Length: 145
Image 1 (cartoon, rainbow, N blue to C red):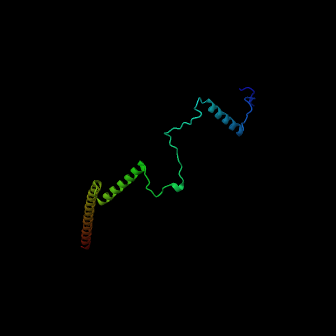
Image 2: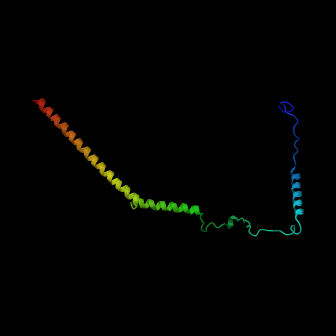
């Protein structure tokens, strides 16, 4: 159990808050120290990196919105992909692609099979109707006697 029981003791100091003015004064003092640490002529010469490009902000009036917009590589590839897909779909609908030809051939085979199945069904139905009619005639003839 900690010292002082459950209620807690007098551990730590009372908090001291620094005012914004004090913080500014401390920052100024640190800058002064940094300037004094420079040796010789270092403090007099401003060294600038020639490779560093300063970013310039453009105003809205300076922006060229009418000019051609350069697309990124990903945007160009995405547009090319969409155009290729549209070309393929046009050719597919016209029946010029290999897949379209295969689909049309398969569709023709299925139509032929369905026509044959319908014809067989119709023949079986007619044969069944003929059989029932001939059976009814026979019954009616036998009942009449």
